[in-house]
Image 1 (spheres, rainbow, N blue to C red):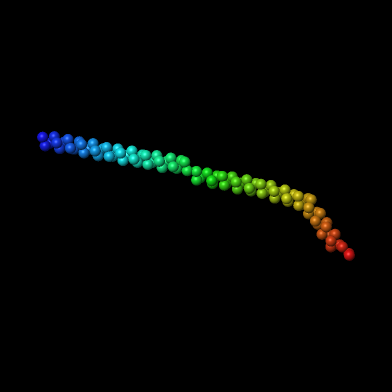
Image 2: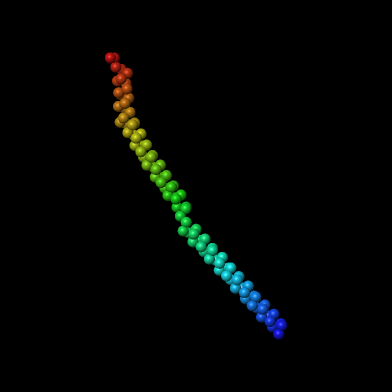
Length: 93
């Protein structure tokens, strides 16, 4: 009888050990799932792309404005200013 009780206790203890091992695995899977969900829901990396696009747009618009001002000053404003300055220095008043 003693051997049967020992075998019965051995199987009972093995069943409890397996049960807790399965609970531990389930707990680890749930934690990993929660971490993956949090990482997937995190939007931290999106700001880098948005900032890059904004900077690129600002550089392009700035280059267009600078080119337009350079063309305006080179053809329209600078000859007039140069003419006015030369007229001021030629003043014999």
